[in-house]
Image (cartoon, rainbow, N blue to C red; front, side):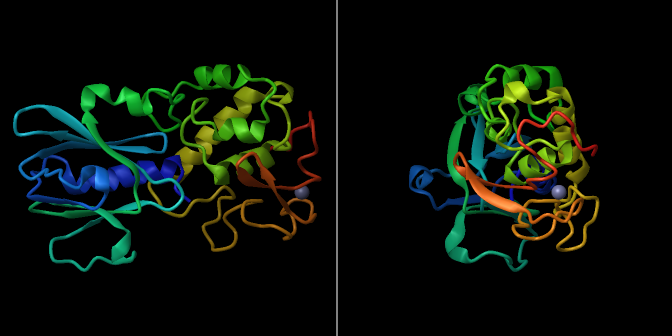
Length: 269
Ligand SMILES: [Zn+2]
């Protein structure tokens, strides 16, 4: 599940493969960029902002542009050595191929791919709240934005990238479990919002630099989460069957005993 940490990792992979390199050919397989040719352009850097990827480029005429993409639920970028076999995803999912002398970057099932002047990046990511893994992470601002909508359920508020950027459904479910808070609790009734925001940041930061996402500390298959993806399985704390239900546009997983509605006694995590 691409969440902030996955996108951060992906940006790092692209940066290592392409930063400073000259693009020798580009092949866009999305209608809006079908005629775009980046050959001769230079890659300045690759960065992430919440769940958005920003590949910053230098055009031959010195103009600075950003190739933006979003992974959503299923997108991925891979970097290969020239001549290496492209593994992992079927070819029909390829949306872009960027070649440089030292690497080939292939983007699979990317969303919202656009090329904008770097000075206009804010049109794409300016609405985002503080980035949990960004150099300018601001916990107090994230708490302030969350608290601005006290009636919203905390389950939806944590996913709203305008509040804080980088939490996806997995970390949302896990953070709420660890704090002992029901996903349906209104933000205004959450006992310790700063504590919840701090925990979300720690979880994402702990998973930076690896592809297996774990909130339990275990990297063993089937043991990486407390509630996410564990419907009907016993809660790791109390043995109650984990539940799964729709909340807003997404499903949520939770333990009805460890996360009672309007809880004011968080389970320590
Ligand atoms: Zn439980």
